[in-house]
Image 1: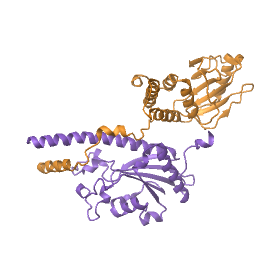
Image 2 (image 1 turned 30 degrees about the horizontal axis):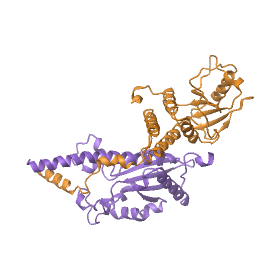
Image 3 (image 1 turned 30 degrees about the vertical axis):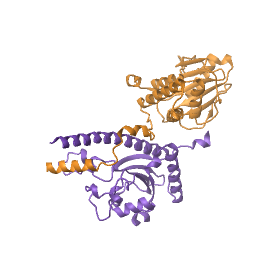
Image 4 (image 1 turned 90 degrees about the horizontal axis):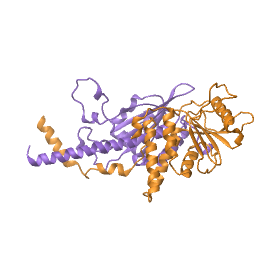
Length: 214
Length: 225
């Protein structure tokens, strides 16, 4: 390895170490924000899953063709909250964290997740949270998250694919900057409660509103 | 950090939280405790505490206890006697019968002083509304507070004190005490929320473009294949 490459590589590795620490700070913030928001509702956390890549990096599979994205599960991650309804059935709220929308906002002619150069530039991409409320449990229909146009519509105007709309699914998206502080998260909470009310979905606060009892 | 070395239980939580809160100026301590409560029934202010007793042992006469009645904490302020009954977690664990025993035992010891007394149920709540204890001849209201609300109130106070930057050593000391307290909550398995803090990210910010890095890594990868 020549000296120039070695110096460049040292710089790459230094920035990568910074990137991991940046990701740690970023993920801690987002996880805490989602936890705080989720704890406000009358729902139980029901686990989460990566939605851009594969979940099985910890398995004993001998398949060596893992994508590098498989090792970055928080790129698109679903936090799933659930409650059993007294009348039977379940109600779910999923919070999808889209840490980078670059793949979806790149040209529709490219659909190779490995080709990062085809993603929209970081400046033209965004960081989003998408909330989806519905009756039911975990959904197999999240394949729409692989469809760039569907995701673009969701991000642009909270629109879901027709099949999900007909089943009463509703969605609302936010920039992740909206997770900045307690009051901005409380605003999201209130808007989700309003969205549920408008659509006659059984979402409510876990506990009495402090303003009523203080 | 002390939290690493102490055995974590209900008593260690109460001791850790209140020994730190009591290091704060009484007006700060009281405002934090009062505003963390679900009701606003506690006095708006109190003066310097005259007595602070962790796990006092009181005469059980008139209760079902045989040897003693032990609340978690008793604080006498000039304006109010406060009995604190704490539970380890924010899940329903409080027992109104235990509150009654503590009130009766309090009167066995301090009844002749004829003072205003209140009980604070901390953690373990079944409901959030204040309650009046049904013990004939003994007037006492039960106020309620969750550990998580107390933790959040302390975190908000840190934010308030740090913006703008602390201007005196007194304010810095309060921030230090509260940060230590928040850390102790964490050691007792309460979730400490980390709100967005630009300072936490600053050391790790990357150059505007990492395209050069990506190209180099792609080149190295191609050489491996």
